[in-house]
Length: 229
Length: 229
DNA sequence: AATCAACAGATTTTCGCAAATCTTGTGTTC
DNA sequence: GAACACAAGATTTGCGAAAATCTGTTGATT
Picture 1: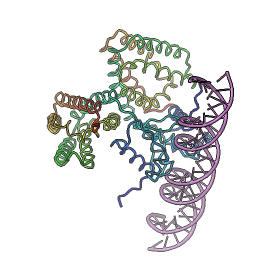
Picture 2 (picture 1 turned 90 degrees about the vertical axis):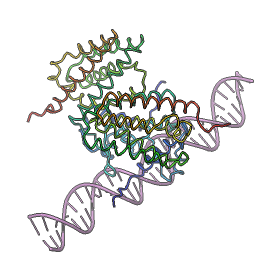
Picture 3 (picture 1 turned 135 degrees about the vertical axis):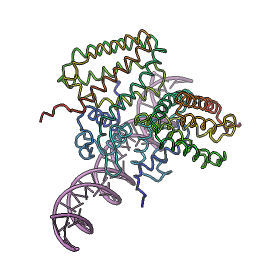
Picture 4 (picture 1 turned 60 degrees about the vertical axis):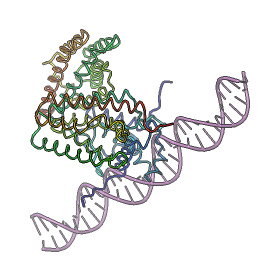
């Protein structure tokens, strides 16, 4: 069978990562070993390994002898992260437009199509389909820059994505932020420019896309949803 | 006392990191727990934590149920890493030139001076002074970009530095590669342009500096020193 | 001769307990 | 009443042993 047995440490890492990203743990919340052991039914050692990895990835913070906490969120970090994403990904897109072959074009077309389908299908209240939507969204953006030819750029893009997805997940379920933008049109325009090998237009559209996203998330972050008191 | 007690895991991480960077372990060499336990006199848990962190940083690789190895080196990775450094650090330098205050200028002057002193003092065969030289070199380059205002760019620069220093350490002790370049002149010119707030010149000199370094290290990498058989 | 199964040794991974450290609450002193 | 010392509980950290997995060798079968 194709089922590769993952170590408990990897499983713990994946589960914790997913729960932090999806907001099941609040920012700055302490992550107690005993609590996690009960929640996941896993011993100290694998949990510690998972937390150490997450700390290196920037999703949790660690203070000596005081354990681990979920990494904080801030407007400043959001702005910085999105600006840096725009800077790095426009370069990776530029290179991909120069170097991309038929397979690269196919990945863009295919991931855009899949994103559109999931977009139609998603209703705001199903957290399951929201996770699927986020996955499609990620796939599309990765496809765009997937012919850069630089392993290092890919790694950087990946880590910046992880740093930004926590800001997006809660606002994805917020209906109010969506109507102002036609997200599919934005993505379609970027894909079109990339496939037309128009470096200048494609990178400008991508940067603008991230700028709009940063603005929208900043508002959502400044006024967290759900608090009606 | 100002001495903060570090956890054994942190100590193990620092020691292993230093030994990998300085070449005490060969690339791709397996890192056996029992062997490391004997070498450092530290138990399994802290060693595992250290190795997990190093894996997340890219200095070691890990395969499930097969343990850890020192991460491989390659000409391709060297080229990619140095190109990416040039790309990211020129941007950070550009921003620093725009935003840098008196303290930033002071850090550049001071770290350049310290680098020059250590450069005069260093003789090729003292590995201790070579480590100090590398430290000064790092400090100078970090000072250059220390006013970028972007935490994310700083993190990226840091991780790329770690990825590249392993290529430089062995060649630092190779006398033959040094005479072709006047390293202090290069560094001095970069600092001068930065302090003169000349974005174009400073970033061009910095990029050229990294291009020359990449070329030099590529040659050293292709023909490892010491093998006279 | 080549392939495969099984066994033995080495290695990684996981667990539970002991030690070290931090936190909280209580009582005493000024 | 406020500040401090101290003790009890909670929590992290570290260690060694046990379990799970891999690797290399030997011997049997086709």
